[in-house]
Length: 140
Image 1 (cartoon, rainbow, N blue to C red):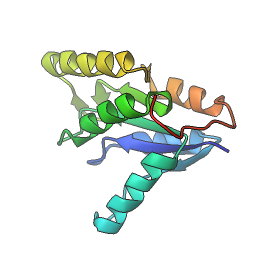
Image 2: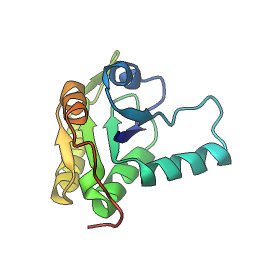
Image 3: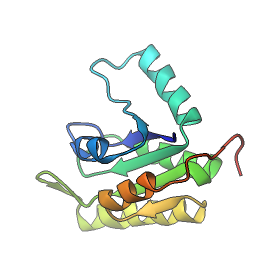
């Protein structure tokens, strides 16, 4: 059964709570109570070995590392990289300048060969109908 790495915004965002119960494939949720070296190594392992890496970025993100991750994966492993950005998350919204930046990131990710989705439901639908046997052993 395929497995998806659930990367992207943490910082109190509830997008994973929406996605996880709706998936009919395995998933890895990298969110842990205490971030340490062991958690970091586990995250790197799962990013490498999951059939898909889904990155959801929302206005609740405080850092930019998730942007670097999705661009990196879309470049190194485009066939397994999935991307979605949400303009709203709870009471937070991206402003017009941030939306333009996220659209530029989206264009970069797509140009690298990865898939982009406009909504969480589109991501879920894709993952739930994804092929059951795929291999991603080397970058394309």
